[in-house]
Structures are given as C-alpha cells and as structure tokens.
Length: 58
Length: 537
Ligand SMILES: Cc1cc2nc3c(=O)[nH]c(=O)nc-3n(C[C@H](O)[C@H](O)[C@H](O)COP(=O)(O)OP(=O)(O)OC[C@H]3O[C@@H](n4cnc5c(N)ncnc54)[C@H](O)[C@@H]3O)c2cc1C
Image (cartoon, rainbow over all chains, first blue to last red; front, side, top):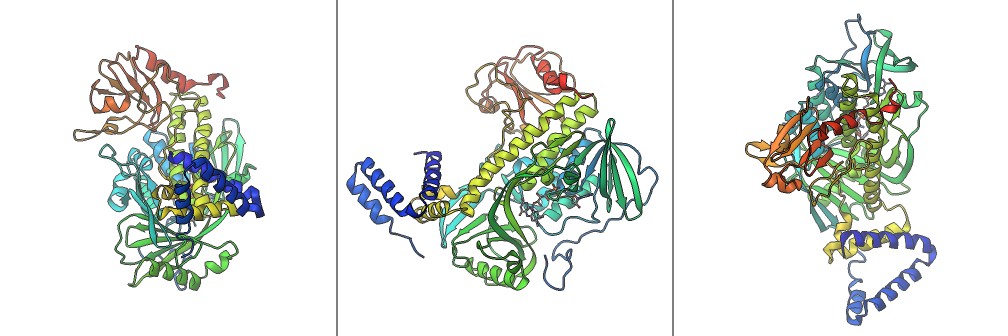
C-alpha cells in the first residue's frame, strides 16, 4: 500500500468517525470486522487485534 | 512579548537600529514607477528584485525599525535562490543554520525521522533557520546599498486614490504629510494590511482552532539543527510541542494551547516560564536558560480572492495568511515578491505588455491554495479539529511505535515545491518527455565542475540548449549550452536538440524535445504579451 493510499484511508476513517458521532465505537467495530473478513487470514487478524492493545495509555 | 523589565525591542542577542524620517524633504512628492508599502521582508525583497532590473521604487514603512521578535525562522531552499538573485544570500549563509532532518516523538519515543530531499546536486539545503530580525537586517543592508531604492521610515500611508494611469498615496511621517504619485503600488503591509481595508477587500478562508504559544529561549543546549515534534509529551498531555534551533543559542519552542485555555492567561510571563521549563525538562535540558521573546499564533488559512486590484498589487501577508506548520508564511511572500518583481519590471522596461501581470494572481494564489492543502493536512495532525481526526491521530501515533509506516502520517511535508503547470503563461508540451522537470515546475539544479548549473543562469530568461539545438536569434536571453549526454541531459530527459525555456524565477516556461529555429522566440513573445487583447495600456 502506498503512503498516499494510507493517507486516504486515514482521512476517510476520520470523517467516518465524525459522521457516526455517538455511534463511533460501533462504526469502528463494523469497519474492523469487515476488514478482518476481507483480509481472510484469521491468525493475522487475531494478532492485530491483540497487538493493538499496546501503547493505549502512557 | 518580552519579560518584565525589558522593552519590546530589548533583545538578548540583537540590537535594533533606529531609523529616522527622510531629512531631505525636497522631491518626496516626485512621481515613482513603483511605491511599495511596508518594509518587512517581503516589501524589501520586492524592491531588491525590481532594482535588479533597473526599476526605481519608493519603499515606505511606518515603523522606525525592524519587526519585533524572531517570528518566521525557517527559510526554504527556493527562497535562498531569491536571496541569491538579489545579491543578499552570503550574509544569510554565514549566519543561518541549514538543516534537512526532522524527528517526531510520541510520549517520549521516536516514531519518525524524515529527511527532506537533498543531494550533491543541490546548491542550498532544504531549510535554514534564522531569526526574522536578521532576515530583515540582511535585506536592509542590501536595500541601503542600492541607489534605486528610496527607503523612507516612519512614513505611514494613510490614504490612496486611483488617478488616471496611476495611484496617489497620502504619506505622513514625523516631519509632515505629502502626496506620492506612483504608477504602481505593491501592498506589502502585512497581515493587518491597512491598504487592503482602504480598498475594501477582505481575506477569506478558514480559522482553525489550534493556537500555539511561540517562545524563544537562550540556552546552551546540545542538539543538532533538527526539527523536533513532540506529540502527547508528559509536559503537555494531549498537546503538541515543536522545537527548532536558531543561531545565537536561541531555541524556538512552540506549544499548543488546550481548547478552553485562554491565550491571555497562557501568555502571562509566569505561565510561559512554567510551560517552557516543563518542555526543557522533557528534553533533558538541566542547565540555565533565559526567556527572550514570546507570542501567540493561530493556524489560519486566509487569502484574497484576487491579489490584484487595478494598479494595487498585494504581496506577502497582506494577500494571505497560512498556518505556521508548513513554514510557508514568509517563504510564500518572498516568492510573491520575486514573481511580481520580474513581471512588473518587464512591463516597466517595455519588454512585456501589462497583460503579463494578469498571471501574477493565478500563479501566486494557486501556490497559496496548495500551501493551504498541505498545511491543512499537517494542521489536522498537529491540532485535530474534531473527534474523528483526534481518534485517528492518536491511533496512528500509538501504532507508529511498532509500525514505522504510520509515523509517516506525522511527516509535515514542508518542501513540496509548487508548480505553475496551470498558469496561463506556462506552455504545454508538444511532444512527450519521458522524464525531467515539466513546464511550470521549478528547474532542477545540477552540480557541475566548480559550481552549479544555475550559476550560469541570467537575471532574465535563460535557455538550456542540449547538444546541437538550433535556436535562432534570441536577443536578451541567456544561453546555457549543455552536452546531449551526461548527468544534466539525464535529469532533464533531454536529447540532442532539446531546449528548456526558464523564467527569471527559475520556473520552466516551456520545453522542446527537438527545438526548431524561432520556436523559443515565439514562446517568449507569447509569454510576454499573452492575452494582449486585454492590454490595459
Ligand atoms: C507574532 C508573529 C509570529 C510569527 N511567527 C511566525 C512563524 O513562527 N513562522 C512563520 O513562518 N511565520 C511567522 N509569522 C509570519 C511572518 O512573520 C510573516 O509571514 C512575515 O513577516 C511576512 O512579511 P511581510 O513583509 O508580508 O509583512 P510584515 O513583516 O508584517 O511587514 C509589513 C510591514 O508593513 C508596515 N506597514 C503596515 N501598514 C503600513 C502603512 N499603512 N504604511 C506604511 N507601512 C505600513 C509594517 O510596519 C511592517 O513593517 C509570524 C508573525 C507574527 C506577527
């Protein structure tokens, strides 16, 4: 994925969260679930799900 | 602002001169081809560019010295070429600190190190840090040495009236008032431009939420000239801090105010001291430090719809206000000055029709809108404007500790050069080039024996001719011959017979793979007289 692709996705998600408003957590969960299914690699998805716990707080 | 007990111009490292109104009063009302309002960096540069082409100007400023404080400190590579063209660059090179690298940190850990484009083919570094007082001092030294520039301090323009073929300015100085008739007016009178108000014009655009305190401290601190950005540091949880090194042991510390934080409170000396102390603790500075100057700045993207209003042309901050993160405020203004400088001089010297001036606003306003697009991106990263941008920013930073590609989202991209590809005076390619700089782009420099390719450029238009290019007669144009093979030919995508026509501001006006006699001259005359049917003269 190019940097510019990554940036487009970053921006689309930012705007998506703002549009979802108070429903942002459900919106993000939908995005994650759909992306995971599209990824079609359960172990990789589970690793990302676990790794993303890192560095959430200082 | 400065610490209690010190005056506005009481700097730790810079002695402000004091200038007087013109002592000789005779001839103050003599007509001038160009009146420039505002002797800030942009007004002085415009006067120097005009003088380079033999055009006289009267430069007026209401103050009696340079701007207070260090303000704009980052000068980009392209600006150094402008300073070179006006004969001032050596003083800048001697004092400023060149740099290429930036580092971003998230909660104290480095998530990104970026290098701006640089190579042995580059004559100047991508960026130089220098306090604005020095920028103004060095430009002033060049202005004072130039007989074609009549600089008048403490001279305020209070009114302006259109008359046939020109403009009359009302000027008031310490000794009295007079009328100055001018053919053209360059309004370089800054962000609050009184000329803009007098013309009934307004800046339009967006005010962003993010506000920064910018504070300069003097200290012995051991760190190279590398821009540091601290995201969510312990000293400002949730906020952003920027640190830049400047000459004279001065360090610029920019820190973001929280949404509800009052600027008035934040800029109280004790609060600035406490905030600076916590930043210094974070970066491990344990020695002494002195507070030099501070101010507050917000991230706006504002511009005039048209930079030209009849015979009044806006340059610099009077025409546009851009956020600091792109470090384009001053650089953008210097490019305005150069752009209008060569065009107005061409018209006044009878080499071009007035229609050439019509390209100024589209070119320079286009550049500003491009800065807005880039700056808006970095502004959204530095000071997220809503929940969505905040969440994504925090997610990217948090991921970046393990995934370096995410760190790239924090790259401020301060160096993307602007292209005049869409300008009415840029000529489209007739044949396909596989590579090389395209029409509208800034020319590429190339290291040569004993110097650089651009050293051979003239003050006016330059033609690069590769191999056996048959150009025909080209009066007034500087011809630079290059071999049809080798490094330059490779970089320019050139073959035997290729030619590039380069404008005085180093942008490419046109290029031909196999130039025919007369083609360059025809292009040049189209550029200088384009839209001649609208010629106001
Ligand atoms: C507090 C502050 C902090 C800044 N910090 C940064 C920064 O960190 N980074 C950055 O890139 N940029 C910064 N800037 C912006 C940068 O300083 C400007 O982009 C730059 O000075 C623009 O130059 P200029 O010549 O267009 O205008 P100015 O430097 O503002 O010069 C305008 C001149 O016009 C004169 N003038 C005004 N009205 C009249 C009149 N009626 N008659 C005669 N003379 C008049 C003024 O006295 C002044 O000298 C800052 C600006 C300010 C004010």
